[in-house]
Length: 315
Image (cartoon, rainbow, N blue to C red; front, side, top):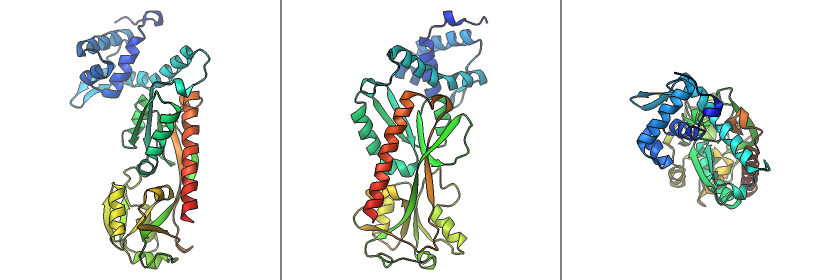
C-alpha cells in the first residue's frame, strides 16, 4: 500500500483513531462519535491505507493495536492538545471557555475523600467541561498513554513506564481511627496495645497487593495482625469500626469523611505510622502544557487545603 503524505491526510480520521484506541470496539466507537458503524470501519480502512499498517487486529477481547498503532496512539493526546492551542489564537488556556473532558484517575483512598471536591472546583472554574473521575486501576498506566485518562493522582514512587512523569506535590500521613468510646481513645497506645485489637483494612488495589500498611507495621514489630474485615467501601469500614473495637488506618484526608462516632488516636513514638508522597502522573510531553499546568495547580491547591484542614480538625 502507498503511504499517504501529510497534505493528503484527513485529520478527521485522527478523531476516529483516538476513539478506537479508547473503546477498542467499532460499535462503541460509532456510538461515541455519533456516526454509523460502517463509517467507522471505512475510516479505519483509510487509516490503514494512510499509515501502511493494520493499526488494529481483532481479538476475542476486541481490537488490539499493532506496534505501529500503539506508537500513533501514544502521540494523539499531545497532537490534539497542540491543535486546540493552535486554534485558540492566543495560545493561553481559558478555563471558562473549555468545553472538553477533564479525565482524572485517583488513588482509591483519595477518590473517597477528594473526588467531590475536585468535581466541584472544576465545575465552578470550567462550567462547560465534562468532569470524569475514576479510581486508579491496573489499566490506568495504559489509559494515561492513550489519553483515556489525562492526569493520574497516586502515591509515589510507582514502577511505571518512563513515558509517564511522576510529580510529587504533597506528603500525607496516615492516622489510626477507632470509635469514640474505645479503650484507646484519648490515650497514646503502644504497638503492643494496638496489636491487641482487630483491624479493618480499606482495600486500595494499587497499594494493598501484599499487606496493608497497618499489617506491615505490626508484623515488623513481631505481632500477628488480626484482620476483621477487608473492604473497598470506606463507609462499610467506618460502620464496622463504629460498632466494634476494631482499628482502621487511613490517610488523614479521609478524616473529613469519618462519622462523628469515630476519633483519631495519637500513637506512641515507637509506632512507625507511614506517610506517603502524593504525586501527579502524566505523559512527559504534557508537562509544559498550559492546560495540564492548570489542572495540577487547581488540584494541588485543593488537596493541600483539604489535608491542612484535616490536620487542624484532628488537633
